[in-house]
Image (cartoon, rainbow, N blue to C red):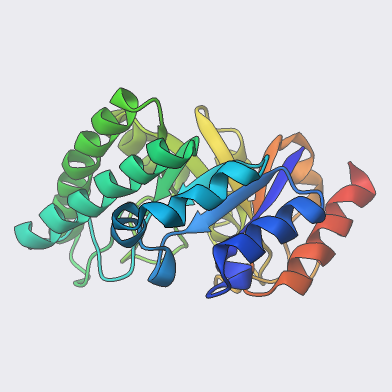
Length: 248
């Protein structure tokens, strides 16, 4: 397995420090959570900030900003700004040689099926434009499955599959999110998987626990070839890697 971790575990640390730690500790992948100091527009405007990536032999993945953004919003202005920031993330990926951009499919704020269906339509249209831009830049654009809540789009294997077909994207299978739905095995068998997010939970909510501390059936992870450990602290990242190494 090519293994890496999300910068969520070291959020707010200087990027050079994170890159050094990833390489020194033998990881092959690093997924940058493009929030806060790693916001794509800020990095693109500061050319010097991009030079650090030239010194490290890691495959870089990007997780597009999602806080306060929503490709499925009922508000056209929000959708347009979301699309703008997704495209900026693709441009950042192209500049630093990142292979993949992952994003969330969106959400709704009212428990009405007609609103949810409209959000799915809007989100697919918005992200289809982003996929086209990514293809022109030789970057994979991938949509992540979400936890089992009505407000989250793409929280079932069928919905994610139909959604990704409509917008032409790859899929990023989040194991923790999938575990809350009861369909982890179905998510893992999907086609066009870019990579996997790895974490554990109690099967009811997304807790970002280290692997082995929740109810995820670790045997199901044997077939994964590209994994990003997505936790809130680096100690948990190392613990999860040990768990994976024990049966790989």
